[in-house]
Length: 255
Ligand code: PEP
Image 1 (tube, rainbow, N blue to C red):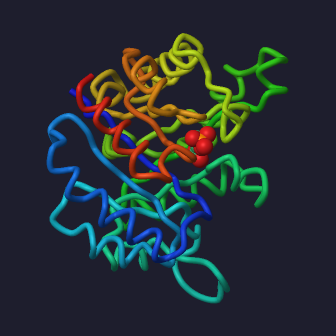
Image 2: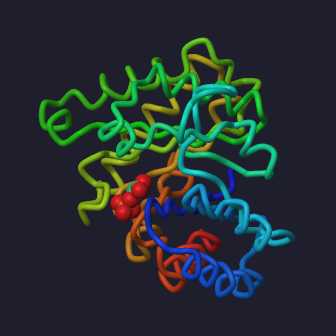
């Protein structure tokens, strides 16, 4: 059975004292949470990844990054490689977030190159996909999602890599307070699961986590994650405060 993943994406929030204070406050409270039910993850800014990994050592809190370079090594000013993240034992990396797609013009092809780097260095990828509001209103959500899936995963054998996580994040729901209804989200998640089944077989499709992201919070996580194909959340705003993040973890651990 897939555990529920509660993954926080801190984006460009929290200075070091705030990030450290958050983890120090959270860790003792995680002892009450059953680790056989949930996986708990936080992606701070690159500069704090190593410190937070050290702080979280021995706990069930996994620390990862929000992006990675598609290059292995060399003259790529400002980039951070998978090799570097592997050398500090980063647990996971988010790739293809809609903010990277929009503000940095990232394509599915580039995201696939990043995915390959993460797999080469044995870091768990969380691959984000999702349609914009215009695309949903034009009733092309399914085409958009299938194009993104093919673009990010073509030629990648997920049967060998069932640890890969897919995050379905409708762009119109990210940071807007508008959440997809559980039924709307489940429809897309089921379609993603069907695609995984047709490409890789049911064993792989059943092993892969598909997260929902888009204004998830304590008062909607239960309804969303209770859907058969929603295996947790990628959470922005509501992961920034210990109280709301912990509440979501506790709810998820009881589903
Ligand atoms: C996100 O950053 O992936 C996200 C879903 O943000 P929010 O929860 O704030 O909508």
